Image (cartoon, rainbow, N blue to C red; front, side):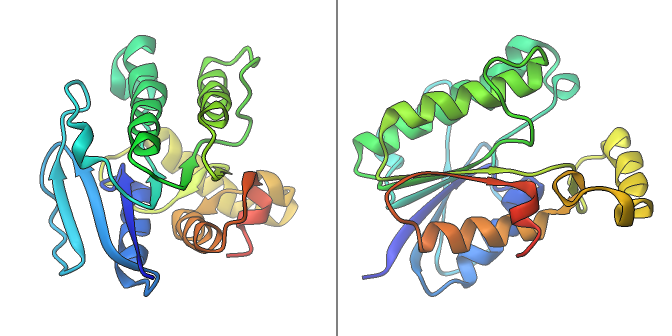
Length: 212
């Protein structure tokens, strides 16, 4: 039986790549996206749902497999509180609603170094969201922890652009776990690992994602 996928963060770097792959995948009959504004993508399998994360309609968060590619930066969010809302509160909200509505699998992009006990705020929040998701008890929880992401972002991030150039130049001498990774590879890993997921919590570090 073909399934329904739901994705949040579809307008981002990994999310955009993943959306294209989900639409092309024979594993999914329907692909839902929760967005604040309509996407430019059009496809017969695509259901675009305009969604207010601060006043959610729980009845729209229905799918077999949920993919979370939502994320921002403290600079873009404007404060640590605003950053936490996007990178912690919203993913947990969607996970809880999806679980109540029967979702079996939840896949999320966090970051290399995610650790709830980290002294680095960014890594701490990423670790905390992983920890809380594990408590929601999906049949399968899949966590993807990429290093610096490479690709054409909708918005410009100068620091990441500079970092991308550095990582490309010195890739041969950088341990694989720390090498920058193409967003396409992360998206492909999310698709393949979710479609073939077994029960339990599965964490994929950046070096494992390089193989996709």
